[in-house]
Structure formats: C-alpha cells, structure tokens
Image (cartoon, rainbow, N blue to C red; front, top):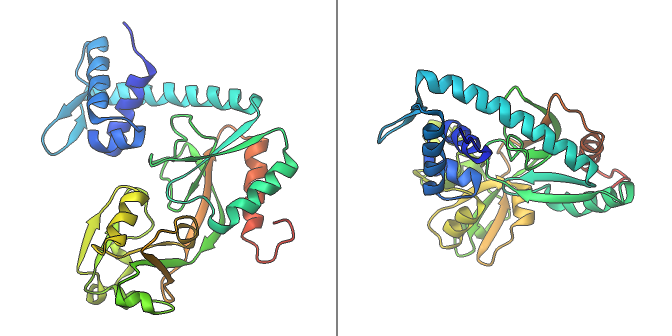
Length: 289
C-alpha cells in the first residue's frame, strides 16, 4: 500500500472546501490533480472514501474514519515541519488579501532588529486555515474566526472598512461613503477569505446583487472594470493600489477585527515575538514601530 501525503492533503481539502474546485484553489493546484489524488488514495486503501454527486461531496461511513486519521497524520507532519523551520532560521506568515497594510514594513524592520538571523517570510494563501493545517506557515493573519480547535487565535487590533470603486464611478468623487451608498448596487464578495458579508446591511438597504469572487485579484478586476463595487479592510486599500480604483472610508461600517492564528499545542518563541510586535503595531503612536 502506497499512501502519499499529497493524497491525504487533497482528501482533507475536499472535505473542508466541500468541492473539488475549491480544494484545488486552496492547494494551489488543478481540479484534475485533486481528483487524481483522491482516486489514488481510494485505490491504495481499497475502499470508497467520498460519495460524489453533481451537487455535493460527502464522506462514506468508512471515509469518516479515514478522514479523521488523515487529519491526525497531517497535523503531526505540520508540527514536524514547524520544528524544522524553527531550527532553519525563518518564520513564515500567511495572509489572504493583505498582510498588515501600512504597518507591514515597519513591523518587518523591527523584526530584523530583534531577530537578525531569522527571516520573516510573507506567504499569500487562500486556504481556509491560511496554510496552518498543511504546515506551510507558522502563523496566519486572519480577519475572520477560524472554527478549528487545533488553532489558537490572538486579537491584535481592528481596521476600518474601505469601499472600493472604479474611479469613473460617481461615488468616487466623495471623501467617504456610508453603507446606504451600496444599496441597489452590485457588490463583489469573497465568501471564502473576504471580510464582507451581506449581513452588514439591513434588508431595506442591501446591495441589489452579489458577484462571488475567489481572491483579491478577481475582486480588483471586477471593480476596476466597473462591473461591481466592493468593501474590504484598510489594509487591502494600503497594499493593493490599482490604476482605475478609488478607495474611500465607509464611515458607519463596523471595524474589522484582525487576529493571528497559530497551532495551539506547539508554542513558539518566534510566534510569540511576532504576535507582540503585531499588537504593538496597532497601538497609536507606539514608539516601537
């Protein structure tokens, strides 16, 4: 029996994402590659793990047990990789749309002062856990709760919400926006990693329609071409300037909470130091940054 780690990663990604397409996006590969890996695992084990229909993917009874064991194996491999990285002189930090916006460069410089021999590596990830589950990063910057008992989340600060519009849009002439300005418009939303949901608006003032996107690049393209407007964090506005796009603060929108997530049962001095610096970065006028 030949069971490879990539088979297990593909299986868990499909279960977590609910579709082979989303699993491929999370793993940074093709849908065909994910399908081949799951099929190869089923052949190696000699049993059906997933039931596939045109609408959904569900585990079989035997598959439920296999998935539980697969998660356990991947968790242990991730911890093994983390231990090796701690000795390898680097700390890998993931983010989905933006790191810490205007605070990122100052934090990087402070890190280099405190840990000159440890590289701080920024990794963009659209995976549900920001790459923590597969061991590709040590800590993840997240702007939504991770409902996963394996990871601990630390609140480091809040960010204002900004509207994103094509520069030709009449709303771009304003210095700021309000939630009511989105009523009757098409809004681009990423339910997977974005920070905007339709729940921000009351029933009477909701956007007219929603365009679902996968990641910040697709979001920016829709907005710059005038097909939709958007809302995201101040960090997105700072780190993703684009020709043809105007960012405006949304005065009455609730702030976005920013968290750092890491493995709960594997404390790291480097992660603790990064967390402290990130929290300090959100303190107005803090002398450290």
